[in-house]
Length: 106
Image (cartoon, rainbow, N blue to C red; front, side, top):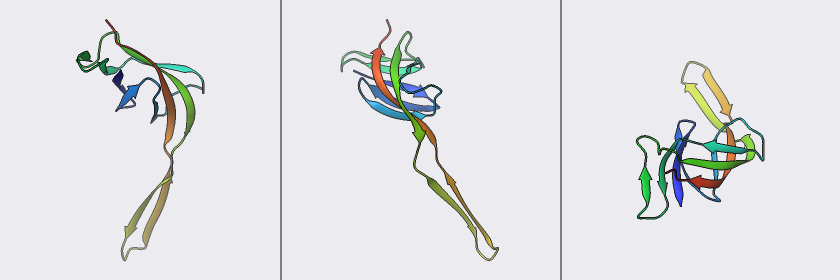
């Protein structure tokens, strides 16, 4: 069984026991979080529910495993003959969530 959820403006494939790294969400490690924007729920190849845009009554429950920062991404800007050289670094905040339960909604 798997589902597709939407959070942080992005879509993620969620299956029970799978860990996903998503955009930063408020909460502490060990807390449960509920995703109610479920786009698709597939229990098997024959039993697939597709939402318009969301599946009514479906929700995915996950447990926050870790709050952290991603790897550093470096961006450079350079203008030849103008003495312009700018180097910037950025580390994106993320939340690692382990999927605990998928409810398909009736």
